[in-house]
Image (cartoon, rainbow, N blue to C red; front, side, top):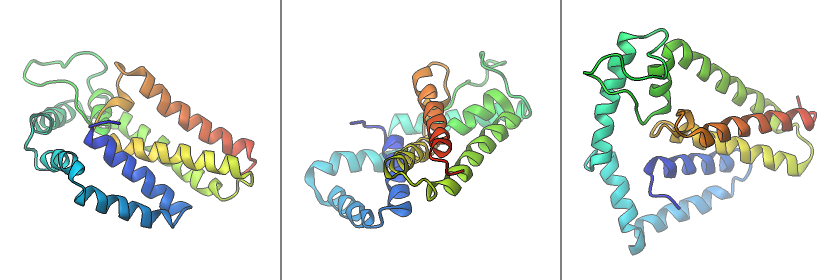
Length: 192
């Protein structure tokens, strides 16, 4: 698996989405798993790692505070269109931040962030309207899984940058592939 705290939070969000939308009994299983994480001796390392990140006690989490500060500085200097995909325009700030939303605003400006949030928001609205109308059970489950994966990616994006970083084209491609497949299922299933 992964040791990434952001990925674990994204996974939790995806599972909670599935539990809320379709499988309500999954809530009990998730609560049992959470209790096991708290009480199993093997989980001490993971829980300690998670807590140290929340408290900004380790170097990776503390480094992110500096990244967030620099990103907000760049966004305030170049609010509309950002700095582009090159280097930072001045040496006093670092370009790049472990947060999809700040990275988009930093590189494409608030206009780019607004377009991204609008497209993703419209996607989720469309899928939400169509989810119950897909009659084929296999397609409905696939649509639910793809949507949950994208929910997880959007939540994990708060803590990392992989879903909008040109150095990781495979994860960017996966994000948009899942989005396209989900929309195709709504069309193929003649739901919307």
